[in-house]
Amino acid sequence: PWDGHHLEWKTTSPPPAYNFAKIPVVRGRRAFWEQKYGSDEHGTANGKPVTMEIHEAQSEPHAEEPHVHLPNPSYWPLILAFGVAVIAVAIIFNFYIVPVGLLIMLAGLTGWIREPFVQA
Image (cartoon, rainbow, N blue to C red; front, side, top):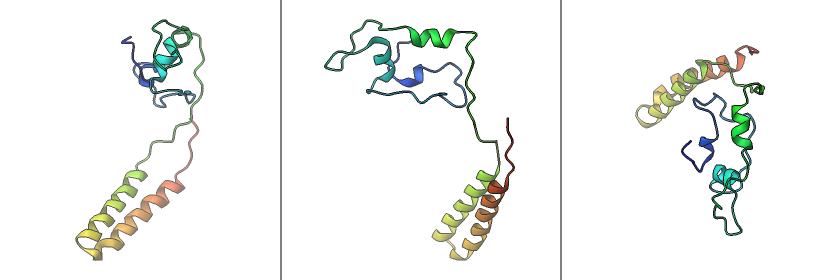
């Protein structure tokens, strides 16, 4: 609605969790603007709408949304990151705590790998 230049103006509001179902083709610095208005041989916008396919595709009520696979929510990556942070702090201040950080990190990594896959 604000005649934005970049791809963040192409998605709906609020945006879906996956951003774009298909990776958009970017041919310039102002990709959304150039899709709407086109550009001349110097790369400047013509100022006239080329096509309204973008707005029509977003406003179709009967259009099917494609299935986009997202990872399952999990706490294991946070445990893994905490272990890495403990290792980093231990390297700076107290090197004897590094094995504790390694154990936390390995527990987080093992838990994350062994987590069952849930098909949504």
